[in-house]
Image (tube, rainbow, N blue to C red; front, side):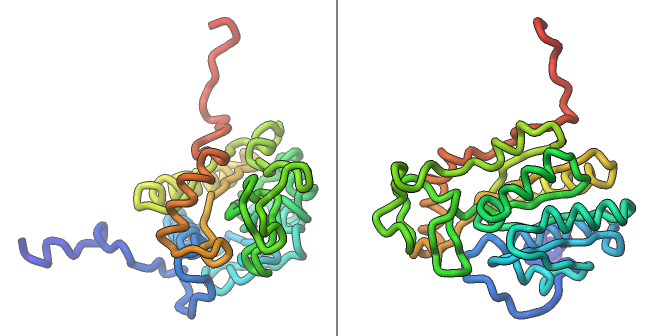
Amino acid sequence: MDINDIIKPENLVYDKSPLQIDTIMHYCPGCSHGVVHKLVAEIIEELGIQEDTIGVSPVGCAVFAYNYIDIDWQQAAHGRAPAVATGIARTNPEKIVFTYQGDGDLASIGAGEILHACNRGENIVVIFINNAIYGMTGGQMAPTTLIGQPTSTSPNGRDVALNGYPMKMTEIIATLPGTYYVTRQSVHTAATVRKCKKAIKKAFQNVIAKKGTSFVEVVSTCNSGWKMTPVGANTWMEENMFPEYVPGDLKDNDIQKPASGN
């Protein structure tokens, strides 16, 4: 086989979207953020909505998202991205608005903000990166930290009697009537990257169609915060996080449910 038979657009695994800004990546090697950024850029390009998309990034590792995707961005205070996105979407209903938030941001200081925005059914996409730790500020325990998982503020592991249980935000969000599509994905293999892209694209299409809130959790690694190699972090995530945060769709209003009794 000639090499030119292989060099085709569909085989360019590392090809960049034109929306991806050519800059030095600040994320740690092995971090899931960069993969999700690439997916978001590709989706916005494929949907042809670059000029109409506004992203909202709050505090945490995601704060520099605006350095990587060439769209309009608005930074929000810690945890307040859903409130800021609400204001943008309501005053600019023709725009496609999304938030990009970590678990320390969305599930802790921003828990009230996200619950009320989703309950109201604001026409926004929420991308929720869950790596079970505060990645940027030193590896402290987050609301999503697993039972027994060591962090810088729980060196002996999360203790239920002291710290309570891991917060399953996506399950909570799925119960709210304002949410249209709620899913949990990952990006640790080629197959899961493809599934995650499909889910995020569906979320953006829902907002374009003004169906309400679409919420995409991405179960992710933080190998630096977890004190693991990238490969070890992927393995640990599969063995420990997936049993607690099970991947898959939790709610999809496009799928008709059978009537009661059928």
